[in-house]
Length: 277
Ligand code: DGL
Image (cartoon, rainbow, N blue to C red; front, side, top):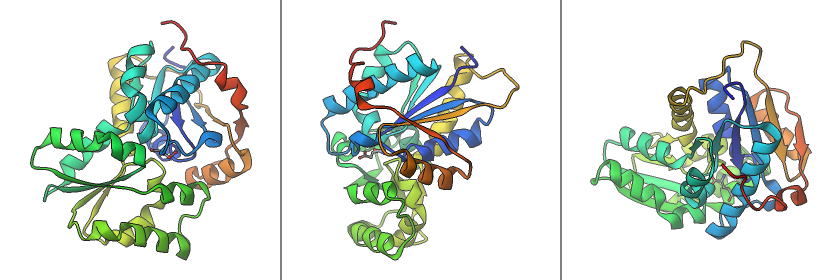
């Protein structure tokens, strides 16, 4: 069990930002990543739909790779499915929202915190609740930015077009006098340089992936699940979408060779129920 991989789930390439933070923080751990690109975006979907998808992928990863811990490396899926999966799965499950909210509450000086995310995450109000739970003085301004998911999936991260889309979209947030902005969608750290330029140097950008990796390290220790093997760890990748485009983004972001395996959706839709505990 201790030597089994950590599983990560996202709708696409966004969760690779969490994977990179986990590789940095826990370089000895094996990982397996699942991007559900054919059903992307998750942002506009209902909670029930997203929960079903996450259940299917969790079941798939448990069967194929015997994952020892699941990271829901997607804010939308964390908001929709974390409490249910906590209850249903016999392995620890870590989401990205609580670590991100805590990190932002630590950093802010003025208590004016922004959240950019998908519509699903914004409508769940999960960040508002958790950021204010840290300190009731915190004021949260949220903005749904689904266009940024499209840019990240297209690997359009630094072009003048990407800058123009991001700057125009973030205009209303500039007027909110924030000192901290949570990148509340795991795709958004891929666009960090253009977001930084749009918001200006005084706004601190919080990538919840970094705090999530720290949380994963703590949970592994608590459950005595830290990997013992001294052989180099493996990193596996699955997508339900186009393997070539996944590999392009993953290789560029992770600076390593990536080979992704394509999973037909029918392999997932048969897995509607979780395996018994
Ligand atoms: N990366 C996902 C998140 O963190 C969502 C992107 C999507 O809409 O599929 O919310």
